[in-house]
Image 1: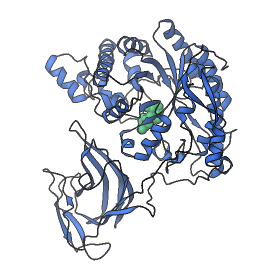
Image 2 (image 1 turned 45 degrees about the horizontal axis):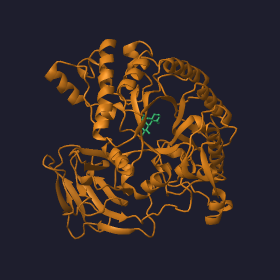
Image 3 (image 1 turned 90 degrees about the horizontal axis):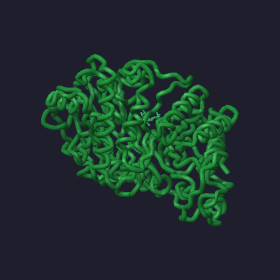
Image 4 (image 1 turned 60 degrees about the horizontal axis):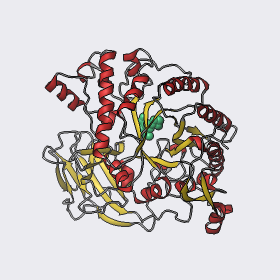
Length: 564
Ligand code: 9MR
């Protein structure tokens, strides 16, 4: 028994407050919550009938777009805004948000757009971060057709760290017409406070956390859920991966200046908003990830840091790897001395499901299963030096993990166990990260992996005598799920969570890969514990139902493999 439990039973707590037997039916919600309800209010609206286009600008000094009211085309009335004289794809009308709207507030934007001859537009978002860098993202792509196209209730929000926040229309170089531009402020959503916080329910067992991207920071209800349920641990969804951290121009500049092409230059600017949040709120961070085949640019492995360069030698890559890992940890701890970087995925996804190294090769535009690490090293012999360097440079208290998906498949499981046994003997590894991207499917019989298969994998990793962290948990429903599918998902989550709980003495963290379904990388299959309306799903209740809320005092006993 790790902690003292109080007698407050969660079932009682919940049935008193919301009625367990009557969990509300969860209708499949719009993927990006693209609805505005009756309580939302219009905060800006124009159909350009008064000829006023002054709320819009072009995109700065190199944008040749001229904006005017025009009666050449219109949806409502007889006037629209014409953006003419565009000479680049990215030229176009922009609408500034941060001088008119409030940070940490959700807005929906709707508009109509038409090209002069054919419509082929994109609706995008841009802001400047606290380092003065401008960031861009596409909100709606492929607004393509021969007539007016609609942008409908697209959700936007921003934080108070962002400046010069704009939405804008771009694409092609023809004239663009815009009409019926409306900004609606969404009703403030209060999250459910009468349910237990996940992190509190398991406080004496393991940390409960989630993955976040910076976009989530500007959504108040999302962050309220994070605070209540997941503030035991944060993983950056993408922003601490090699492609986000490595800076090609700076690498090349350093090489040119010094003649040394083994000291990669890095920046944590993409992760900065997330890390600031963790620092401010005292939330421990999982570092994800140092050495991975994916989301790692090919140029990192090439002469001159050039995508079309020759592959570097293994010796040179070892130096790059060491200096990268050194700079990574040194920069992190210098910038964020108060954050507890308590865990790090040193190597990610190095084994195939069959238990072999990946095929050698480039990533190209991403998405390839090939590995440039294998290309340069010839096999998986890059794993040990990665752990050696991580051990050397990681801050005190930062535990080192090997992390993988399909970690319950025999071939991969055996390869991981063999690798980890060797690394453990050398004192280089602390734990296994079980990503746990699971599929509940339409019945418990069809679910993959089965609960017993997952449980066996837990047993095997547990026998290693290393720590285990569940690092990216999600469990999909079929697409267009019914209420019955959400019930299966709940039963499956319960089975998986019970298996985890039975091994709790060897598990130090359980991280769910995202907060609400609409923000998941598998949004179409609703794999998370909260829906797009920020409501706890049956899967949430299945996990907490019947459990006790422990008192804050935590005492750790000896690790034990059979979960007792
Ligand atoms: O959640 C991440 C998603 O936003 C990215 O598009 C994707 C690209 O590879 O990576 C996702 O995170 C992955 C994680 O880093 C490693 N395990 C698999 C996760 C889901 O693809």
